[in-house]
Length: 525
Image (cartoon, rainbow, N blue to C red):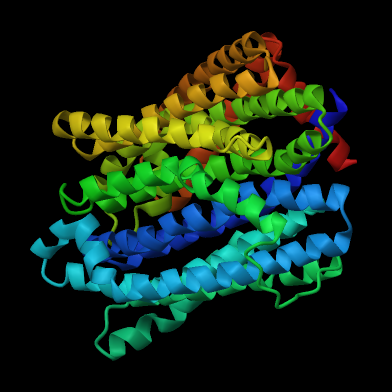
């Protein structure tokens, strides 16, 4: 195992640990929403949250991280540290100014924005108005999460990954605490209790920012009130950020288009798609984002030092690791979709019919899981190279294809077609990015990657079939249908699947498995 792979795996494991906690808390948050609130309320909440969440990826976490980290890393590598801190302060000040104005406009124009994307909500009394109110409440989440993204970029540039990766967990904790604390108070005052989730979003965003401040101050950051649009580092970030907002947010735009089309489907379609996408994001967040986040500073350093061979090796090893962890996760979600959703969500107001509907969406979403994670590795590489226009052009193609596929598939497949169209678009996005990246840095050894992918796919298919039949057989051993029994059967099935996957990978001589096992052994020692 190469030094690059070892370092990448070590950093990714720390991020994965923190992200695992965040994703678990995120599922608890989703469980609370599914358990307590009606389909009307949850549909309204998810559409309202989607608006600032889309802007978050356009102007904050996604594009900002990809533009800020390479520039800040370059300043740390080639210039005085004080200049790097001045750049960070300037970026923070500009973000607060610009995003505060966007937030104000968003609050004032919420009705028009919601009407644009969820006009069908007018057909259900009170649903449209509830969506507008929650959208207004949640818009200030945007500047909070943008500041948190810059703090994360500073920490990652210094090789600190755990606390920034833990920050989203604080968001979920804040959301949960506020929602639970306000639930009965809102009912008592005749207000819809789901407003507590909207308020909790703001509390969570504040928690996500505050937990990261001690780390960056420990690294030597000192805030400056300087506001300079002409700062050379700021100009460089803006050049990357401008076109990059669309390039990195292609998936978010596709999801938003899905939401818009889903509002025309049966009651609950928006929620089913959201629950399914949340589950699909679980392995992406734990593994895909972890690998991409760990790789970005290394990629930026290679670019800054003009180390082309090291850059190619880092990207290639990152993609192989993405395949190793996300392809099995994808097949696992496909074969065990119904028992997973039943265990997590089927409580309170979430019925068996909701489980089946959500499982159908999850199966189609999961087809593109590996591509979602791979895109998170490739897009920042273009930004580090100063080639941000390429992802923009590719994203335009991807978004156009997504719209076409959704319009074609929604008639015969309903909301399920939206999930399939999104997955197919993600795969195309990945393939185009991979092809064009090789134009700038040379061969990423595609034959090796293709071989690795199909080996992992074969092992994962064996695992998935084994999981499915073991679950069916084990479930029939008892007539019990308690939550404890369902959990036991599911976890045993997953355990059997992992054992099958291990031996299948050994049989197929998949080297990435050995890297993962060696990493675990070292960490246990």
